Image 1: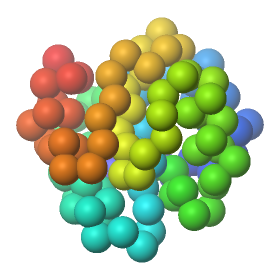
Image 2: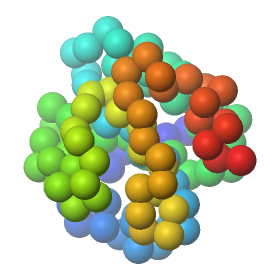
Image 3: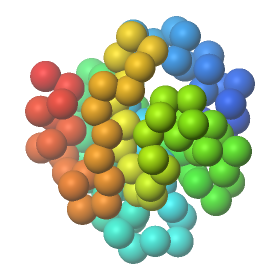
Length: 106
């Protein structure tokens, strides 16, 4: 199950308290993003890794903050894996698959 994160403050708390976690930047209106969300949700049900979701339409400021702060070009949908307060992996669009996310988390 993924947890919704909406603000920079919420994200900073997560990044400070979690050693590792996944974040999905999800567009509420994009069919490709809907497919990526389905894959991400399947992964989140099968892993012990903590999974978060950011709705880009509702949290644009946070989405841009993450892109700038971690020097990762903003895309949507986009999955990011954070470890030790850094982005260790990211990918987007049709590359967001349950099996890929499992491999990253291993």
